[in-house]
Length: 417
Image 1 (cartoon, helix red, strand yellow):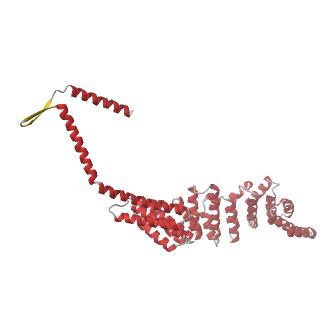
Image 2: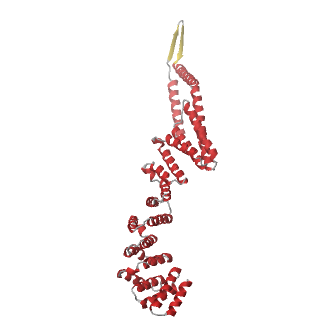
């Protein structure tokens, strides 16, 4: 379409020139005593156009001639710029390939080339960023070579070259790399110190949070590690299963760090509702509370959300739940007793619930019902610990009713398990 328009315009110009030149009868007379020269107006216009074109071309040629030194200088500067960038690319390639000595030399060569370019009349537009990146590459290579002195020197140079706003991203990257190097040196406090130098927005990025999580776990700051893991889970930095496992493990560590009942209660209350609803955490917290001599009623309150979903628990968790409830059956209230009886009534063939109901009957001194339920549970239990406890309880019940033969057989079964 554009070519067609240019062709039409060319035809229009040709027609206009033909109409003007064909009917133009004007002349131009030049008086040069004693001569007189008569020229047609068309010829004069053509000569004027040719003179203008010649003058324009001559001036352009002179300008190009006088501009040759500047062009040569710019060409040399471009060659040096290309050499700087080529050295940077070589350093990155060697670093990725594991050739750390060559990567370090290439980065230092890039710095030397950039310095020579800077001492001339021209310099790189992003020279500060190039220097910072070259120092970072050299520091990364030095870290791989376990040359900490060179690493620290290049790191400080990189931070010094990246203070401005246009190199802010480079500075943030340098701080994150420094934090990762500190983690590799098993120095979590130094890693946290480097991360504190990040702006607020950069500190909440996934990479920074991952580093912070590792540093907090390594330094045993469980609360901070748990909070960081929650943020990473919200950012979907882990798969749902991995996030669930990490948060659960850190929450369990937080509960384990409590050395008295008050600390344990504060740790439990600091957990989010979704975390307190995790069966593993609730059971662990209740057992931890019982170990510290806490209130059994409070432990049962923590276990209530887990108990309400006991029919959906796997066998291992159900056994752990029963063991956690068994520890506090001495002070069981009628409400919980009704819950246990209702669960056993709804699932009469569940050996684990039979065992729990039998233990509750033992605590209330209902010997006959306890004997019946415990005998049924001892046959169906698969967990070795509960199976052994069931036969031990049967032995004690037999002794209670004065049946030494049955007690001896029950003790043998408990010992064989």
